[in-house]
Length: 214
Image (cartoon, rainbow, N blue to C red):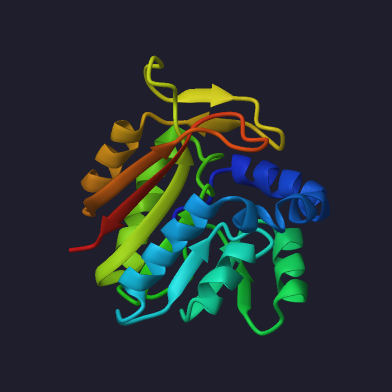
């Protein structure tokens, strides 16, 4: 039996329900404005395109990254904690599948996905709960499947995980090697890391981690 979802996730869902329309409008063209983010998604699509199983965009928000991966030729669907975000995604991209769900207990069979995208969708997860989510990702990925994980990175001088007041709700910045270590402990093999400086209205460094299920 799956463990119950942490209680704070209801707060996160409610917070994003309340800002869903504003969020969707603000970030509708974010991939147009960030060529490096687009390039990472293109590389991810190239890696997983010929693998068995669809791709899940976990924490898909209003669905723009899901739709972008679909345009790149992937069989992809989105999952988000916020019902309002899922409603917006369904309205904007009626030909794609979007489900309300939690990454702590995915309603998916074992070893069925060719890829998982977690694009800045773990930033509100309490550090103690990250290993359980990574274990779920490992469970649903087919052998050879890949995870692309985007997260907020600490400054080089910062030590440990850093909690801060995100515009929506409490969030966390991670030392990239620390989070990469948890990914490896979950049974995934690190393929690449990228850390970049903030652009536009971003408030800190952004990181991407690519990992593979053996």
